[in-house]
Image (cartoon, rainbow, N blue to C red; front, top):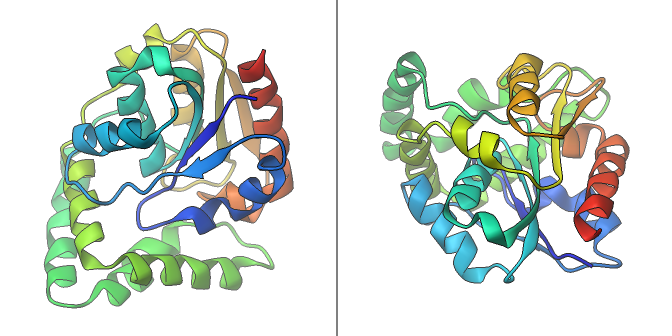
Length: 233
């Protein structure tokens, strides 16, 4: 079975993929790589490649998807399959980059919890019975990673390259997946990625926002399992 490398979103860790790790690790190696030790996409991707198996299926959510695209750019022959979840292939817009500056200042001043509570978490989820539980988990993950990871990831996101040509050149099994109600990376962005990647599959998860891995784990697991079958073939 092809090993699976998972890349979490900004200020998230392996807990973002807990349902997927539980469902998929019975018959394959599953590794969730941290992406917070450096402040450029290039360095983050290089570290992932240093610790990854020689050839692997690669799935990333949000910032993890952005790092995954850089991994693909650096080592396309090592990526047996690509799954991009709730992410964005484009470079950062100037207005989004400008909003990061006051956020980073607040975090440097010791207010990571306030930035997460007031500016980050409100954009993550659609309405649902598990919303408070998942938001609490998001705060726990963020606080456990800490302010230095927030600053590194903010700088890496602000300076990231456009990866549309990288996607256009990829010919392996590819899944593009998002929550129907994702306010951060809307469905149209995923339709673009499906158009860019030859033969890719688009899966839109109903009743989910930016974190379908936690909001709708069964549907997300099924889509990933079908994609992994193609990677194994």
